[in-house]
Image 1 (cartoon, rainbow, N blue to C red):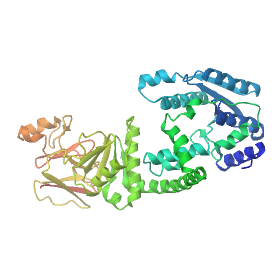
Image 2 (image 1 turned 180 degrees about the horizontal axis):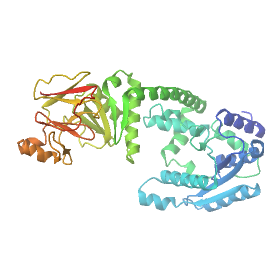
Image 3 (image 1 turned 30 degrees about the horizontal axis):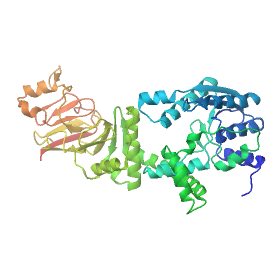
Image 4 (image 1 turned 90 degrees about the horizontal axis):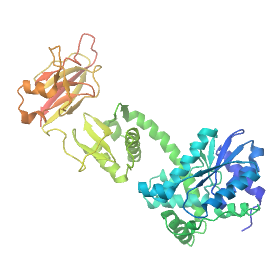
Length: 455
């Protein structure tokens, strides 16, 4: 294979950068440099093109305190920067000490502290971008890593050229091409011997799995990169379509998300899974549920509940509760201990809701009428200790269970007595007493008739 000339490497990198709009004239870019051949190549590339592209370049080097050579490597990076008039930020990260305290892997702690340092510099020194030296071989490793872990399509999109404030101009190039570029300069890159040891999953993939795959396809790195590019664009289109479908069946409310079951069941299977993952992830993020991971099996359990479950059934996955109520699936923060539970109240009742434009005629004590525009999402549930009830015909309010006692409901039945409520009020103690809230009046245009039946 012919060696690529320095100017050809630079032009190919610029072409990649321009295609993905990695920067614009006048931007300030902070390079993440360890001193190894890849990151040194990144620094040297930006030194070469800074004037042409009208960029201001900075450099951050983090000492992870994991090897004796780390200190001399930071000195090397600092010297290269000083030679070319590049501002260099040296940061210290006690990775082994913190890993011992948290129980996390050295790899995870090192990455987290490294990016923390980078973002702090970006914020305080007003850089627009953080440039990293990820390349095509890294992309191939990432695709294989995600594939082995059972990732979906999103994971198989791999490393993106640009995501948030991170840019990766070397993704087009192989590691050997970067090394050839660095060899055109009078610098000897640092070498981290731990990269040659099969001590992490990624190292095993790089040192053992990829060489084995090259026996079957010498161009496996290129093949995996092309696959990631194809999936990335298809994922973008599927995400846009998912956005539209979410609008059709999902309604976000305070502390919970509601999903219309009929609308959801009309959606193709692939999009159902995407919507469920998005809704559950939203609950996880909003409630800051750290360490919670949504699995394929978990999504299938939730999907099966929504498609085939009956009102009152509940399940949980990854800290997210899913409860079926009156044509809706409710997603909120919580957990059950043993998967699907048949009922959150006594499985003895079912609620039927009909809407009318004229005031209907009530037939019996098992029916109740509400103004559809005065109430939220109506659900059949059990009473809660903090429920407050505002009885019709009274000016005051009562604790729900106290009111149930006054209505002569036996103590052993109160917890499982059917209660009709929304997120704000209890409207009906089934069969017995209604609230003064939510009732129809002369301005009512839509009437809800609630019919409670024993199974």
